[in-house]
Length: 104
Image (tube, rainbow, N blue to C red):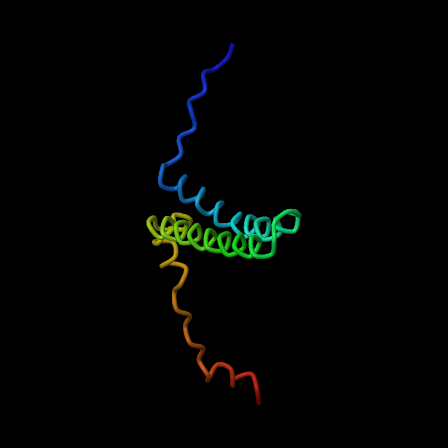
């Protein structure tokens, strides 16, 4: 007998944020690929390759700005603010008189 599985529900905001984080991680790899691509082109002149590099550079800047704007839109959901507040309790200062008791 087969049980019907319910579809996995992912919250839309956290799903989109994770995809944007993935895109941000892949952007440097894309940049290396785009910058090394002119080495494979044999028919283009130096001026054409230079224009291509500046266009690729500008495209990477625009893509980074768009990803950054998207990541700033949604707060980071990976940690709980209540948990963070309880983990950062200030440490009690040590009593200087208790350290000197053992030395005589």
